[in-house]
Length: 496
Image (cartoon, rainbow, N blue to C red; front, side):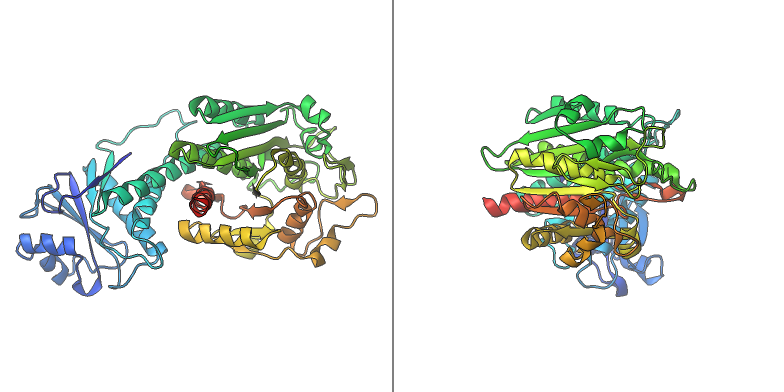
């Protein structure tokens, strides 16, 4: 969909539909008041007779309103006459896009810049509106034999703004972020028989061909063996699909040290010998959503042409049961030289990430952030709303938390204390790959922290936020692309 900015009023704008907002108790925004006055109180009459009350997300589509150049007016409710929360704004935009999509309008103009959002700058609305609109209109079609296009589909949204330049920048950033989320969703939603490690590698090559500033490198299993990645390669032994280590280098910041994003790329996780229950195992195609978010973030910053350096490192494999697969009790040697006792083969994500984290050190990174659907325990702790965050540097943790608040893609920090490390003690190796039933998300991060002692690092556990389970809503969410893009923009702004 296309997005534009206009300075025209709601009366003079020539579109298929103009969208204005009202609040409860009959309070109108300036644009709604303008239309009400021009139509000799038509909006007020609809309010008075109860056709719309102004509750958050309620909509009313009007035809041929007197004094309005556009043939339709969509009135959307925004609740009390107070600043909206980011959640309320998302509900307002979602309801607006749903109503427009059901109508015959193909082009609409939104007069919602008059709304105030709690603790957010004025331009935030435009950014978030595009992300929400694209999410609302997203449809997975890649493996469907029939994908009928909707007649009179919505093709453009125009935003009214007084400061066109600031608004346009917010629009550009919102669209790039939304496009990155769509890419992450598409990769995440593909089935495991299509989206294999080799497929991910091909997609990375294509991304490098599309953007001049991205250079892609693929390491095969022989090269990884030469580097001593025994932990990563132990996971792929049970699969007929060869593992890949994918690197995408975005160079936009001269000689500055890069931010390295390490994304878990398990394209299917059956648990290995420690086999997962059959129910819901189809959703284990989403175990590569950490890598998908790296793809989405790299794509977004390349679209924006940001003056920063970012490197995406993706260890990719499958985890399947086989005669050559890891067995509980096996001991493998990581690239860092540390030996690992595998007590549970379903704790494989940390086995591929630890070698990728060690590999990342060669880039002399300023920051390393890994993103992984790592533990079911994080869902128990935080549910599906919030990403788990742990870090060995408090300033980095604060910066990511702020980026989550800025982008409404929130995270919550969990402890990474020495007291938890002893749960990973092993009688037979330097470290065990699980720490028992208590604090599973924390001990998983503690495991990774053993391989990040020489650089500033944060871990995002997205097992609860990367996809939705069950029913018609099942599918990848594209998170935490908004948080990561916002973090990089914030970092760029602070350093300039």
